[in-house]
Length: 210
Image (cartoon, rainbow, N blue to C red; front, side):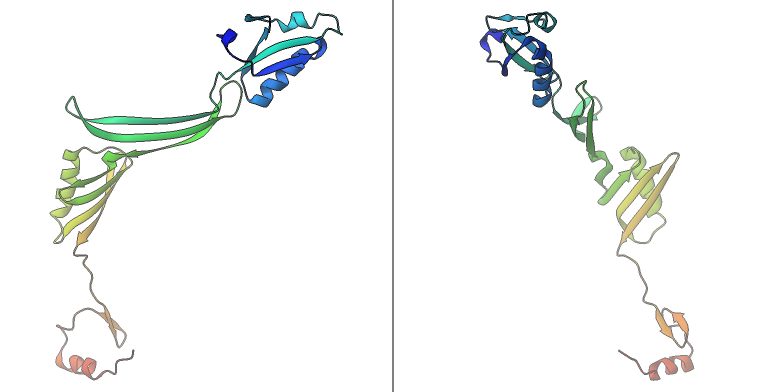
């Protein structure tokens, strides 16, 4: 109740200046509006239009209570649960946002971000990153098994991008397969196992640099 609260400002002015004075104090404080009362009757709001009609030399003393209808800064944290059937089983996503009021009528400007725990998981000892959409564990297993069946080396990491009706799968295997390429007399070659004897002799006699 205003009766038990000290005013934010005690206005001392004249009738012609009262409205301008109230607006200035509201602006300076960042409030959205103000309630003005008579110190002798703090439970009743004063009509400033009526105050301006008083004789110009009247000394005016009023209490001003600034009201913040909208917070200056909003901080939001939203936590989405994951479910096993209909039973909550953990956290699937966390969103965080911060915004600041930029107008007195409640317009905010800010930024938000989130982390979807479903997009990064360990599946069958494979580190999986998923972006662009949601993929169930069953669907994920199908993709990993399909890729693994075509490869000699074990998948250790998979980046999966959901692109509409398509899914792009990029995998890293263990061990990472590579072949040392040797440049000899203008040729790019791998192993020398298939070379004939004279070519092997040429390679053996070649002066190595570095």
